[in-house]
Length: 605
Image (cartoon, rainbow, N blue to C red; front, top):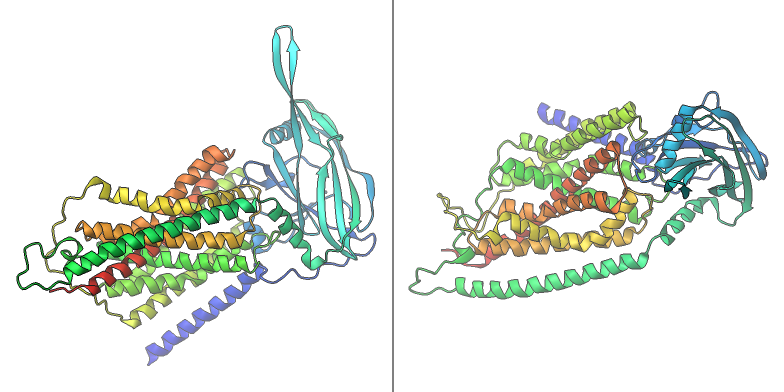
């Protein structure tokens, strides 16, 4: 009784901790609609904060705004950042811009000073890399280029050559829309007529300035973020997305119809032959997949690793469904900085119980006894690679001084969350599965002696089967994947979450049917090693995702540099690994249902 009371106390304490962390971190996602904004009076100052700068083609490579020699206040004040903003790399700092509510500014000097030769070279290097800057006006993000290059052919007595000039934009134009006493929208432009030519290695006298215009609008404050969402939607080719979905649906219909017809005809013949009960059975009475009935349900090798991967795949599937649900109800609107990152971390922590339960349930059913070790493995099989890669990426970002590096307090918060929530929930899920004591009852008992495997043709090998199993699901999501890459690793805003949900469903369906078909062809060749093969076949789409990532980096983007390289391939490896686990679990589940069904149907002597 004392042990039961202690266990109940621990579980209750654990659940309370989960509730506290879900409340605290969930609040930073801003799951509710935007709150009423500040009400400005005439001539009241509207806050303008500078955030960061970075190369246009390297979205993960961002630096503090004042890392370039812009004019700054004597004591710049760092803005307080929530969890999501810190994950998004925000470092908002006060600026010298003085915007007053409803006060038009024709031209106003910001500062004037002399750029030293090394400061000129800094600006020139930034202009060469097409640096963008980001600001926030009343919390609304605005971006612009810091300068431009012009290349002109010049003729000399010795011949003709191109000469490149570098110009620094010195004037910003703010166009602010307001409704009554609220700021609704902000547009920022640079004036190409007011620019300064920079010459490498020479000092330059520069004067920065700005202007402001105020325009009334009927858009309410609570709907101001919808303007950004509408602009992002107009920037996307919706027709191409729907064409992709239609093509994928046609693929699903043709594939499922083809597999259903073929498998049903083949299985009908198999069932008719195997269900016969002749008085004198011939020596070929048992052929094909019936012959391996005594081995097909044999426990797979490396059972603990296998079940841990299935459990982790179930968790990632739950995480993906949760993210899509939040996206469909409008939680990831433009301007909700870092909401997606926070949602991924919180949902992953809260779904850890799924990994523990699914993994231990299958492990115990198949005869495993070290369920506690299995629970620890299920909790760490994705978490450990994540922390290893995150540590490397974060250290590289710190070395380069990038704002993409998470602050130390945020790193400790994530570690604390995983230690206090993820790991205990995984153990709790395993305890629940252990108490269930669901015995595995296969339709056919395994033989004592393992059957010798026949010689398998090369086109039925595991590698060839993985290529077949991964290509078809990947081809169904290829176009949508391109736009997601352009959003995550570019400057597009992705808002078509309904289409993304359809693509995700299609991906699961194609993966399931392809894995079932290949599993049948495998056992028809009297190869009973379907456990691992179904997981590898289903998860092979993750390999194609990573290969496409490498192709995108090399041929579809202009990303460069060590920092961006580490960021891109580090996190794309984690995403591809997550795809592998999730779709591998889906492939195993469908293959298991199929195998059990066909062996329950026939008569086994």
